[in-house]
Length: 350
Image (cartoon, rainbow, N blue to C red; front, side, top):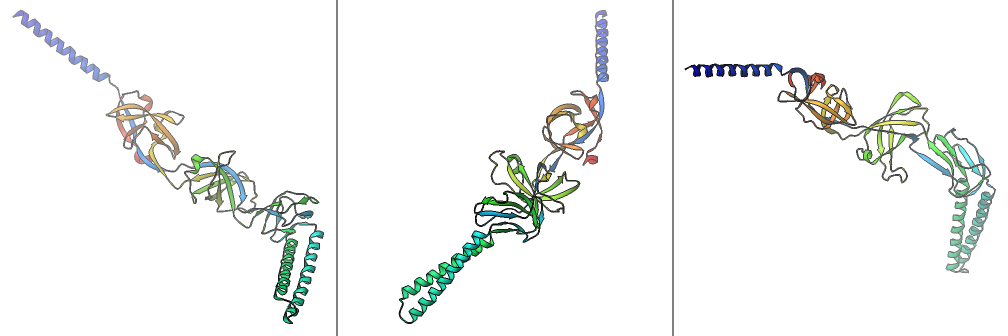
């Protein structure tokens, strides 16, 4: 009987000790109150940022139709000229002599044709002789037209209102047929910003995509543009594709060569998760850590970050829509810390 009483007392003491240990364990586990954000997916655009140069959409290399001695250049680089204004001329002595020669030849051919026609009418000349005379007159007339055309194009006139970008020759030099003499930019037409695009950027864009342009020459102004032309072939030296951004609003003081910085917005959108900046821990090199609430506990997770959007960042990997990330209270958390969610700020951030 005595033995039974002793065993019963030991059992009671042992059970009491176990309950005390369990109570201590529950009491020691820390619970941290946190605020969370429910991850949601977001459609967004990745802008393409690039620098380029302002240019007239219509630039021309003006030249003479025929070669010869340059007599006079009437303009200087940077000058603004009106439509039809004389820019340069050749020495016309030789060209005028060619016109005179062609005129005399045509007059002689006309007389020969008239004589052959009279003789043919009187049955003195044959049909072949008459036809030969007519052909000779037509050839002489063509030579006269060519000479007149060359005379007219031995002067360079401004095709439209514009600016002289560069003069490529000097007075008294001999220039060849079609050799560029003046680089001319029309200001009566539209202005573009020509930008070099890498292959990874040009595949995102399409004609009509919008852009915003800033220029050092006009630091307080923002110009709107759209993609008007995408390069079809890469530059063999740089490997980039020259693309044109057509400016919608221009400026009276635009000049070819101004440096411009453009942000191009693709029409196509991408979709990924979005989280507020407060959720990120130790962000670097497009990676960051976040605390995710799983089954009432904080789990530290590495995520891949993208571009900034508003007060948050796009997460391209490591999170799914609907998960909870901790936005306030992270500094008190460790891996597997028990948490109590006191507030969700999804509505406030969206």
